[in-house]
Image (cartoon, rainbow, N blue to C red; front, side, top):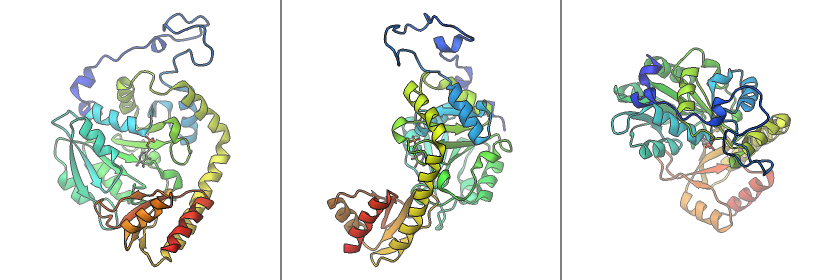
Length: 342
Ligand SMILES: *Cc1c(COP(=O)(O)O)cnc(C)c1O
């Protein structure tokens, strides 16, 4: 398989926009190249289009090279760019096992790229045979979300590896929740598979959803394509500098994460003991998928009390299920108090 051959022909040929800050290299003190306003203070300059300082920190943390990192305005931007770089509208397809995160489908639809849907197994695992049977020579991307949203489980490592070995396209492993999981990230496999793409985000374990910063890890050829087609200044100055500050604050982030995992165990046990609960699915993420005897009643009663959870009862394999994000200890207590009254 050649990554070069997978890229859409027009993107392969594309001459990218070259911003003022792309072209200048070295040291300068008088910036008259980008039509910026010289008089305002903090935010008058365009941000670093390739976020070099931030990528330096991320490279150290994740043990990858800076040229294996793409940063997006949320992982959602990376999802969209991957589809745009590799899928010819109206011709190519992506494969999405269901149930999973809704943005893959939406991004494919926006780009007029066909979606092949296959169900996960009853245990919510990927089924390699089913997927390999469903793909065609037009299938360019497979989206795997592990830990999966909304089911919370990790997919079997050997099944993901089997797909990486047997599929002549990109396997995108979305690890938005990996920091809450016991299993290691697929980042360690980057050098083994040139068709592996990993998505992570600052929105969940880092608690920075409002800043919009997503990470994409892949071989440098794939990263170069994403950089070529991204909006030049996709990560703003404020986001870059606040996330850099957060790297100084890492123990604080670890502590919050440990508390969420602790709350997951507590809430799991409490919920499993309730009569109104049919099943609590084990979770490697910061939420629990819970099957209720009467999910409609639970959902609307909670809403009346000002507690909003995610109704997933209409999603394939998730009959009667609500997805409940883990909150602070006191928020989780409020939830339990209301559920106990039902
Ligand atoms: C929350 C979530 C994301 C994060 O998206 P951002 O755009 O980075 O906020 C990505 N993938 C999945 C599966 C998610 O649940």
